[in-house]
Length: 468
Length: 64
Image 1 (tube, chains in turn orange, cyan):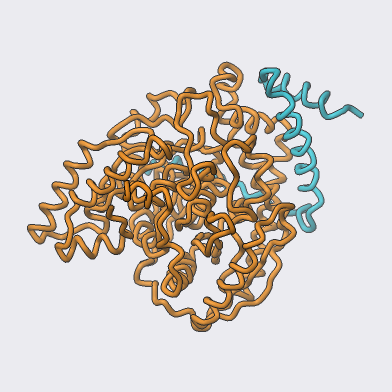
Image 2: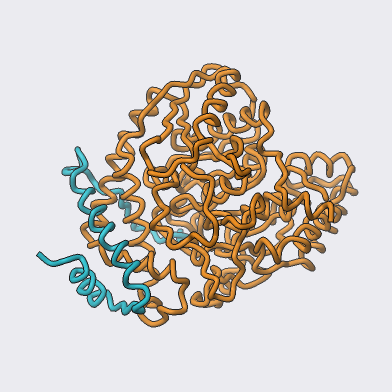
């Protein structure tokens, strides 16, 4: 089975070594083989994608100008609207008319205009929060590295879809880590850009002031290729920022000379810690140092306070959206969704405003840290995942995932694979930069991946499928 | 002083949400933790006179 990065696939297309139709057929073959086991898709747009692939092949053959993603199979998390089919948020509750009235979200339209082949809608946790509920009529996403384990969430289908080559890239969303956690657990790369960098109109909200849409793909370079298409102001999103967009691919120099990197191992952040994490982090430091960077130990300011601010903000904003349906359709929600969002009744209006004041204090403290370093690295999570059978609510897992802090302050954060634990589950490192300095973040991730190959490892479930 | 479960009962009634019996234990756990998190916000050094990260624009999104 073909299993290319986006960058490699584009090169093969330009050099006439493959066609968009072949790439799509290969992706479809993976999905045909594995979807029922892994829970990748909620709906597929095979006919429309094949037509788009044929048009892409015509453009390549004619030598006409090609968009930056021409002929690349891409999946869309099913809280983001597309013209081809309904948006469900993997929920019985969401009014299907919502997405029909929108058509393509801004990000979907941008991928399509760049030549991307929209293959379908990928699984999520209900409304981008919580954990699976097997009592509801939706797939339970499984991790391709060990199908007893969860993919992480909430961009679960983008995680296991990219990890298996069912799509070469896709869209996730991230309110407290929902791009970065499934990317970490599934052994791929993903970036939450600076808040406001990518327009989020046309996406079902979770936390209005925390939500981000971003790319998930096998490599940092692939993320840069996709972010070049996705980033930029659109007036339809009140949170979108009207600032110039860098060329993220052009910034991938492979050279980290002079780059100052702060390392926080976050050893006290969670009670449970995979014993393989620290050796993996040591190897990351060695690789980055070898690329010219200087790595020093730092301590992230206000860790627990900013993580709490993210939680209170996210829950409160979600409750405002869901209150009418929670009042009238409680049992239609997934158990973890209703239990998790329902805890927002703990917070007063004053608590919500106080959380926004803490975010301001935190932004200043983090900016102070970034006066001494260019980037910060941490483990993405203290654990490599949990078995599906052991999941109860996200609330009990929240502290193990070191991502929500950065939603509170808005900085760009990329995650890339950094090895495996004792039972073969991927480990991940998070690389964070100053606001709107996605170039530095992606450059570091790409440089690291030029001297490592963790991101190119193939999950055993795919190997087994290929052999079969 | 009211216990957490008494506070939760009032909060749920005020919000108009009526959870299923099977969910109450989980919600109480999250609610109790939530009260602790909220209290923590008021102890952050420097926050007393800080402006919140709330920005209102008089311009309607998407309108010229």
